[in-house]
Length: 102
Length: 168
Length: 93
Image (cartoon, rainbow over all chains, first blue to last red; front, side):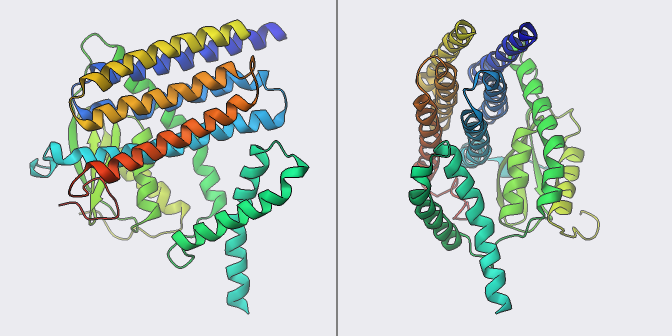
């Protein structure tokens, strides 16, 4: 049983780290501000989510576990809000409003 | 009296999450209950000052909870989508902008639409001007417009808002 | 298991180094802010990963770091744009 828990934990850790790597690769390689913001917002929070899942079996008690989940939820809420703010503040550099819509 | 009762219920709905937050923060230490009562009370007062009941959108918690699994799943898809583009040798992107005529009421519902779009595959909310929401898309070949419309409809259902006639 | 957590934390430290490159290069101020945001999120994950080996108080540090990251971004948006384009409390021009 503990082998399964260990294997699952390591798998979750790897997925989490992979999403963080994807986030920084996107931040480094994507061509413009808004595309980079996509990578930052989506990949990072998923990475933190998987790392939180990997930490849950090791949590000393239910309070530590709920604190871990709370940190993730708050970070995700903050990231989703902050990304909109940064996206909006970067708007004036790109003159979106002159581009035709779909 | 009825109004008073409704006001108390409203404040309680703000107070309970703050209290739960405090209990988790302190690992339910009984010695921390009294400061917690004060802190959660102060947080409730501040929250009522910043967003009074009259301006808040009334959310049906049960339909909100029914949204959560689908939303989590789509945010996983969003992460995978952006991850393979980041690792791909040529970073396949066709960025484009969508100016979307929002039908949701201003304030909370629109902000949550923007937040959810920011975590979903290929879309990113970038603020709004009047009723027009700017949405950045990573790949113009993706069916993003359909995704935006269905996300807006899901939120409208959760808050019990009628989107009205066809989109123009 | 602690070793696996430490390994993951080490890799995350390297991603922080990578995003500092973006902070260095810019070119826009929003880019630098985004690099700092990624460093904050990765820092939260690193602190959470080393907390089983260290003290549970590290989770509180992680929570504070998460809060500071969000506040920093809001302060940036409020201060950086002259016409308040990023500020939802003002109409953008």
